[in-house]
Image (tube, rainbow, N blue to C red; front, side):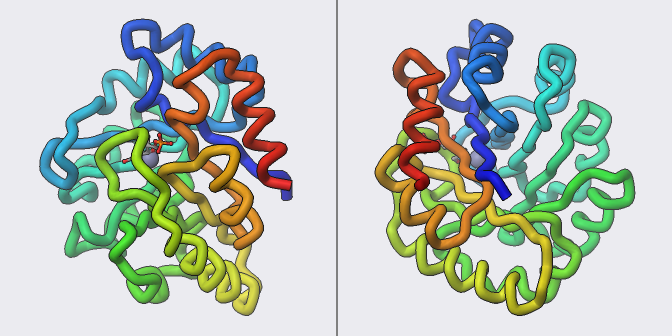
Length: 218
Ligand code: DX5
Ligand code: ZN
């Protein structure tokens, strides 16, 4: 399977969001990664369903919605109505992870669980068979532009090994501190979907940044 590159619009210029999304689409992005933060689960506050509905209208790329919000099971349907194709939820954010995943899948949205750097893989084993993807956070969620946490590589390797042993088709996504250097080891370890915010949006041209990531992965 080819590697999927998902630019995180957290690092885009929000005053020109439409242009920014269309620019990364033209530059070869595969998905658009949308970071939803509620100021509680993480210290930062970003955007929600109304903005996602607007994004849905201006791109056909899959919308990969990363929910960093408390009790996501209470509002998942709003993100589905807004047009999310993929929804990631954090087990640290809810006592009802299995219910949240059921709600995501009930309406045909792809379901993913996202793990903070200090959360062990143990928390996905009970639900692994239900998942379309596991998102390994390689920074502490909340902000773009942070430094990659190297222990994520071993976590991806262990997860990849289990997915292969169980003959599952679950994707592995990695998010945080990815650049043309750090991408090499995460892809070698088994990541299929790579999120990058600052490495794509912080300098022009976007096409060169995305190609640089693809080159770093081989
Ligand atoms: C962090 C977000 C990431 C972030 C990545 O909480 O989940 O998606 O935008 O940004 P970079 O690639 O700059 O680390
Ligand atoms: Zn994210």
